[in-house]
Length: 165
Ligand code: SAM
Image (tube, rainbow, N blue to C red; front, side, top):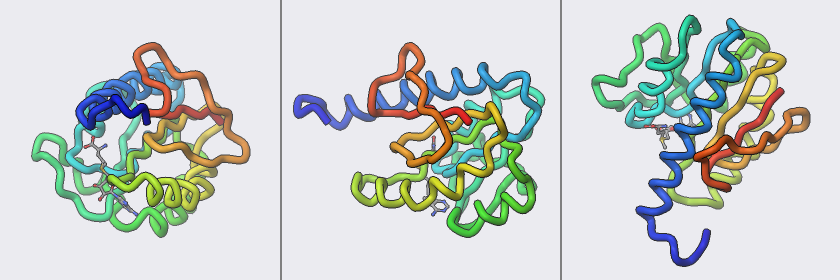
C-alpha cells in the first residue's frame, strides 16, 4: 500500500474496483446460463449491484450470518447459510462446475489473515466455476488452473483481482 494513501483513498479504490470488475465479469459471461455466487453478503452493496445487473441467472449468497441492509437482503432460498469452509464443498455437490461468476469479498481489516484465508478457500472455490466462468476477488487468490486477467478500465491495481477458468 503506498504510504500517502489514506484509508478513505483505499476504500474508494476498493469500491470503484469492485464495480468495474463486477460489471466486466457480468458482461463477459452474459451468454452463460450458470448461477452467480456472492461469497460474503456484508451490508449487501455488491449483492444489490449484482441482482440489478445480472439478467436471467440466479444470484446465490454465501454468508455465515445475514445482517444486510433491508433493500439488499436476498430471498431465503438464495442464501447458503454457514461458514464457506463447509458450504463451498456442499455447493460443489449441489451445483457442480456451473458458476458463471463468483465474487469473493470475505476479508476483514487484517491483511495477513485475509491472505491466509484466501489461500485456504481458493481450492474450494476453483472447482465451482464453469469453463469460461469468471472469478472476481477483493484479495489475491491462489488457483492452479485459472488465468489472472488484466483489470478492466477503472479498476485499481491490487484492489481487485479477476480470474478466468
Ligand atoms: N461485499 C459486501 C458488501 O458490498 O456489502 C461486503 C462483504 S464483508 C467485507 C465480508 C462478509 O463475509 C461478512 O458479512 C462476513 O460475515 C462474511 N464472511 C467472512 N468470513 C466468512 C466465512 N468463513 N463464511 C461465511 N461468510 C463469511
